[in-house]
Image (cartoon, rainbow, N blue to C red):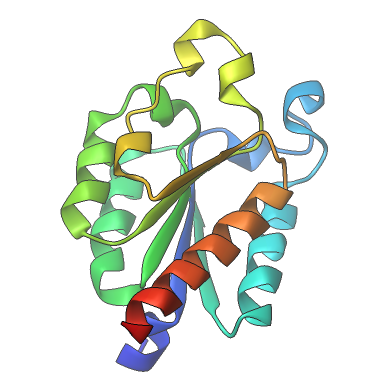
Length: 155
């Protein structure tokens, strides 16, 4: 990826168990698949002249490595850390450490769910948090992040 591509690329990260979307607890997460969410993000980015790079992993270390690599390959990060939202100081520190703007997204409204889901280690380092909008949250995250980056570039 050349410098011009990375300047117009957003990294879309999805955490553990999101590979099961479409069949996993549809009453909570809906029937959209991970591929549907990624297509939504790709469509939103393309409409705005941006690219996306998508990664899903059930492994915390792999997500952290992708965050570190984003410093040279992406302008910003959209992340659904899934269960790591509530447990991973390491992901929070990686996001803070790379210095890229971050949008945290959740399919369900984590604040209407179990008490343990109400706390996010990621939220304090995110520019915005979108929760409970389902698939549309990915579109909103991409739109917000692209707009924020364009505003910063304009000075």
